[in-house]
Image (cartoon, rainbow, N blue to C red; front, side, top):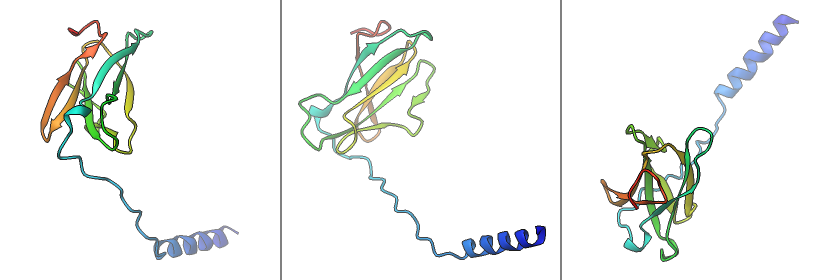
Length: 131
């Protein structure tokens, strides 16, 4: 019985190795090169502090952003970490127009005005930042 199972598993593994499985298409769109000034992101404290001392920061596109307008935003922690780890949140243009994230005091929100041009966005209601 053991020999039969090993032969069967070997045949399955061999047939899986030779199967013609097409590669999955990757739908990563390039980052937008030109950004609309009307789509500059806004940030505000939505809730907090929680039991860990974190604040819920809501980052969103303004209502004046035209349909299909797209923007990139990121959060920098007090110690220099970047949220999300991939580098930025895509907002608008088929992606969610707002993102909420729990952060500790001292975090900053940045908006990408142009390639390699990240600008700080004031966080409304944040006790650690001037408003």
